Length: 268
Image (cartoon, rainbow, N blue to C red; front, side, top):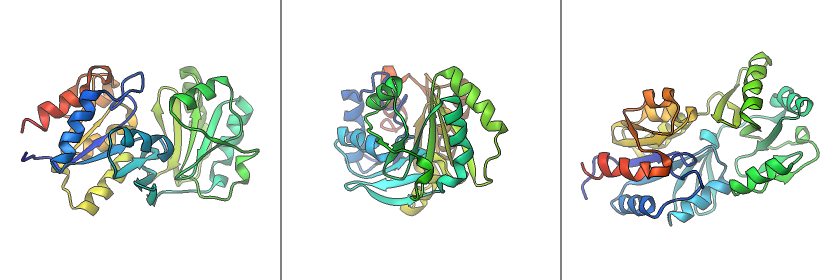
């Protein structure tokens, strides 16, 4: 199979997986067929390695994953850390104190592990759904390891309010934040994005943007969708994400990844 595209970059939640967090058989078959034809499949996710690697294993693949929204690039088996954009926990002291004061749940991630101070019933359900088991610590502000991401989690209303509060807080120049889902806000290094990580990986592999397909469904996918020669948004994406894409495919509940690859990649 002679194909124009050499790299397929895929968001996971809301894109590759359906709303029941399932990988369908037809999507798996299509991706494996492309890999066997020599195309590199790269998962680009807000998840950490602990709950991103199992998705790659469901695909029966090994390779490179862009995790934590681009903050850590890893390779399996291992996983082995290839690159990270990290910062110290001291730099997010104001956010941690704000979350504690306003009872907003948060977790702190190193490249490979996740730490929390408390886990309530709602948080436990969320972590179980995403197949991750965070380590409970008394005080994250005593951590000395470099961290790659702080994530806030709550209801849509809580996250709307958290966005307003973050705009008022004085953050270090080196940090930024993004609404990575309806119920999530990620705080990371300003250098971090899925697009930047994908750009670095493509450069390393000597793959031109014109030979890359990127598919996603949320705001944290926009820069990778714009970077790729072919950027595809899911039907379940917000309007701004659809506008950033070259094409819009069916939703994640309608095998949108499979249909897009069939139409735009395998038919060429």
